[in-house]
Image (cartoon, rainbow, N blue to C red; front, side, top):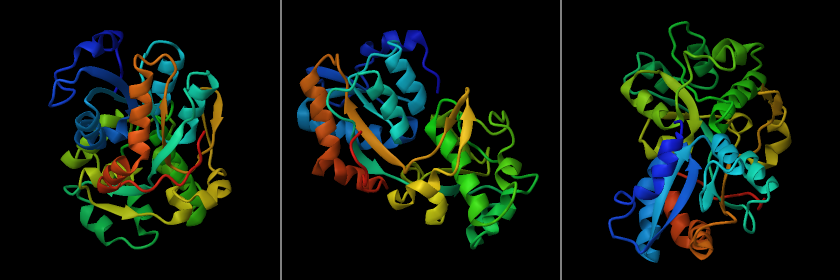
Length: 297
């Protein structure tokens, strides 16, 4: 999903869809696009009901959001990215009020379309069998842009880790092709919808988002799924270069941070506390997210 300057300027006017109740005030929250259903159906309406504060959400790739925020293009009260990288971009710019607090976690899974011609084979796949399906020339993989979206990077990281784990030289490059493979890359908010419709056969995606959409999936080994903090050093052996920078993965943890210059600093801090507190944590769990398992940035 791309954010136009017009849509950003219009954002404060989009109050009708914020909350069932007419809240006295509104905060704006930018968040990783994979969290859409969780935010729209779980966290945001629950926070509004409890606090009387409306929430206007802006979903997109977390890296793109981080650069829009640090560049002054996007003014938001709270930022909720996945992985430490985007959080550190905003923190390094001196824009975080306090700390970036870990609030949830997830893992990479192999999600597939229930109407794909490969669905039966994927459903029955054991061990490394899914890797053979991925190499079929008719197989359609979907992923997001790794230059702007952490999930797009994590697909490539998981493929590299699978290559090492299953001892399949060249597997990642054969499956993904070039970094910006136009046949595979789609906007993050639309990726799972395309999967449901059968426009692509499968993706490697966040378990939290896949569970929220009730899609069939295959669990990946811990050495591949990027969920275990104890394997941080092993995960970091995967890498990719995008826009002249080298990136390595860290375990998949979601962070929430109130930002300096928030229109209502107290409401922004309350939102972060809500996500980290028992009510927010119960909602995360209901939507398929795991406990944070990380440290504050």
